[in-house]
Length: 356
Image (cartoon, rainbow, N blue to C red; front, side, top):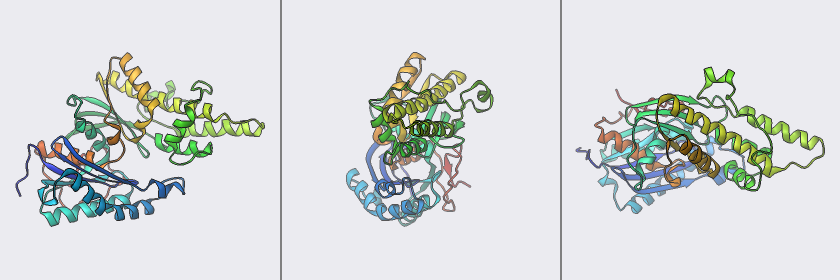
């Protein structure tokens, strides 16, 4: 089959966690971005349940594909390629998307590109019609529910280096756990944000994980939020034990400030150390306004150009997966073979999966 390598029409499938994302792009132009979330089904459990997520993907896939095609004004037969997230993510959830993508590709006779979820978050930036083209190298900070990663991107399709990542809880997980400590609903990110709006971010000096001089030699670009979560728990327990009211707004604001401080400090350190005056933010936690505001102010002060994709493309979505595959096609990369599977711990250096 002849594939359009100048402006390929690609359908992307993303099922790594609790959002069924179907996106369609033509080259670097976004045609549709359909997301079906199973968040409400997980809320009663206080976190994502893999089996529930996989079943929700199974139910949402076909209607989501139909909706995306209708929005884009194209048919399955028009597609130049199908793309899918191979990892990282929840194995069972990934399998649902991979099975659907393989079935589509085989039935249509189209090439299939199995790609890396985290690199997809960087590719989301390409779909911002109002932004200048992405320059290389760039440092990328990806902050989502399950991942916090700091990357050096020399080329989106061939050269992504992992500088550091979370050694325990990701930032999103820390938000969920602290929200639960404070009696706030799941998901924690938006709830902490709301509670913090009237709080004092300097009220409580919570620890900045892996930021001491003794940590920096080995963990300069790594993140740890487990100690911070424990510090919040201890602080609130001591107040309750003393019969005092817990100032939820101040706790939320001080916790959020500690997370944001560490994220931005380490990201800008990576920019300085590698001589890269560009920082890209990606992932669902980027919806946090305080993180965006602090990153913007401190990046400007450091002379670093900050890029943030449209918020609709920061959460997990199929459009970013389609965009990454389109870049790979335009770069002349060959598609995946059908023997690849779900890889829940896929390293970020593996951008395209399933190549011989």
